[in-house]
Structure formats: structure tokens, C-alpha cells
Image 1: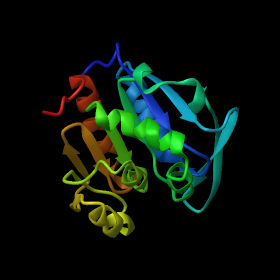
Image 2: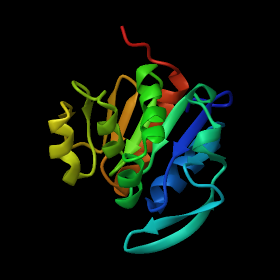
Image 3: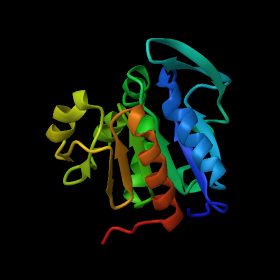
Length: 184
């Protein structure tokens, strides 16, 4: 397992993220030694969505307007239906995500998380997966969508559902451990 002791990872989320899609990668990354910050346009505490109802509340470590993409080595985008829909309408959030893609830093998005990637206009030609209901939107954005538990494309790690979290976390840790992928 790669050691991530010198890596800082941002988890960008809004209210209504799918609970396990934030808590599971966060725990796995921290266990691998990374410093993980939960970043949100909101401050204080934000509510998770847990399958069919509201779940736990978690602390926001840093507000989006107080951080820079330069502060982080990698980005995680959890899913949930409400969360990406809010983020994709937030220009500041989209700009934050775009910066990671632009610099070739690892980005890991699961379930409905890849929805935010569409807004960046930067996924044309990329191979990825997502929650099945997003495949048409992603294909329309120029991505090559495939149905696999985890897909890695030059630092972009994507998975479909919480059932894929083990594979997702493992690949995210691998990619973050390898560091920046520079686009040629």
C-alpha cells in the first residue's frame, strides 16, 4: 500500500452527500497517512444522506472560499443525488474541481460525483464510470463511459456505487501515492 504521509487530500461536498461515499474514502486515505480536509461552500456541519433518509452530520474542516486547489495534492468527490447537483451550480466549486483536472492531479469521483466533472468541460475523451443513470450525460459531455467497479484514466478514478468502495479507495490511494500525472 502506498504511504500518503506527505499528501493532502480535499473532499469537496455539499449537503446531501451519500454518507458512506465520504466516510469510507476519508477513513481509507487517513489510514494510508494522508491529511484529509472536508471542504464545502457551507461552514459548520453538513448533513449526509444515508440511502433513503438523512444521515449523520459531519464537520466541515474548511470553507471553499478559504482554500486554494494549490493547497491539495488530490480531490475526492463523493456522490449522493443532492450534493453534486448543488455543487455543479456553484461556479467556485466547479473552478476548484477544474484546477485539479487542469494540473493533472488525481481526482476520485464516485456514484453521482462525476456529475460535477461535466461542468468543467474537461472530460471529453476521458474514460470513466459513474452511477448508471449519469451515463448519457457523461457520454454527451464527450466521455467514454464503461460499466466497471473502478476505472482509472490518467489520475481520474471513478466508481459506480457504494458497493465499489473497496476498489475505489484502493485505486484512489494508488493514484494519489504516485503523485501528479502531467498531461503531455
